Length: 330
Image (cartoon, rainbow, N blue to C red; front, side):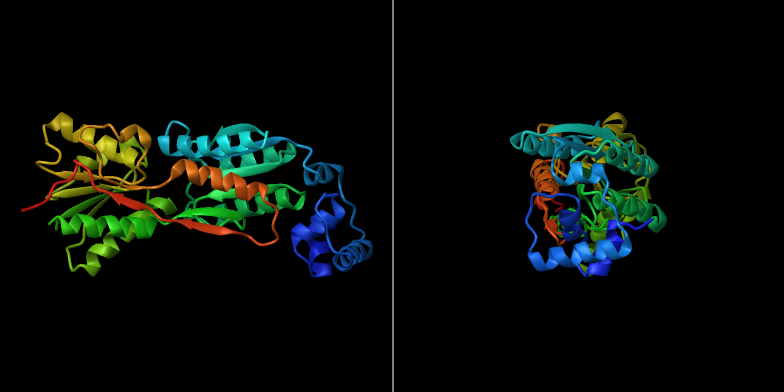
C-alpha cells in the first residue's frame, strides 16, 4: 500500500506539506510544491482517505492526553496545564492513564488515531528499551501520516514536538547546592533503572558529586512512587543527605524516617525533584528542583496545535529551591 510518507519522499517535501496538499488542509501550500506532491501521488497511485481529510481540516475538536499516573501530582499538574490551554481553543479533552505500562501507551495512541482526535499529547518518561520506543514512534508516525498532530513532555525520542525537562542539569545543580551546605555523604533513591527520567536525574546528581571530588553516593533503586521511596529510605546507610529523584518518592522517605523516629533535617536531610504543589506546605518543607509543570503542559498542547514542518524541541530548566528539609553541616 502506498503511504503518504512514500509520496512525500517521492516529491522531496516534508510529510506535513504532503498532508496539507492531499488531505484537504486549509493551510496554503505554494503552487510549485503542490504540483510536485500531486504529480508524485499520481505516479505512485496514492489515494487519500476520508479520515485523514477530516483530521487535516481540523473537524475534530477533541484532544487526547495520555499520562503515566493521574494519582501522581506531577502528571496531574501537566494535564491541568494542557487542559486549561485546550479550553482557550474551545477544545474538549480525553485523558488516559497508562499506569506506567508502555504497551498501554502504544494502545492509547492507536485508539486515539482510530477515533480521529485532532491531537495527541503524551506526558511521561521514556523507557530504556529501544524496541518499545521505536514501536511507539511508529504508531505516532501512522497517526501523523493521517493528518493528526502530536507532542510530548519528556525525552526527545519520538520524532514529535517535545517539551524536555533538563533532568540531568537540574539534578547536578541540586548536588552542588547541597555540597555547598557541607554535605559529603549522599544516598540517591534512584527509582527504576529502566526509566530514562529517573536514570538521568541519578546520573546528573552523581556526576556533579564526582566533579566536586566527593565520594560516590549510595544508589538504591525501586518503584518511582511513594512506596518506592518509603522502602528505599530504609536501606540508606551512613548518609547525611538523601536525594529522591522525584518528590513523591521523597514523601515516602519522609514517612519512613518519621515512623523510625529519625528527625529531618536534624538527623538526615532529604531533597526531591519537581516541586509538586501539594508538598509546598509539607512539614518540613521539601528542598527540591522546581519545574513549571502547568506551563510545560500548556506549552506542549500549543506545540501540538501549531502545524509546522520542523520538529520543535524546547528544553525547560529546573530551579533549585532550598527549604527546611535540609540543613547546613557544620
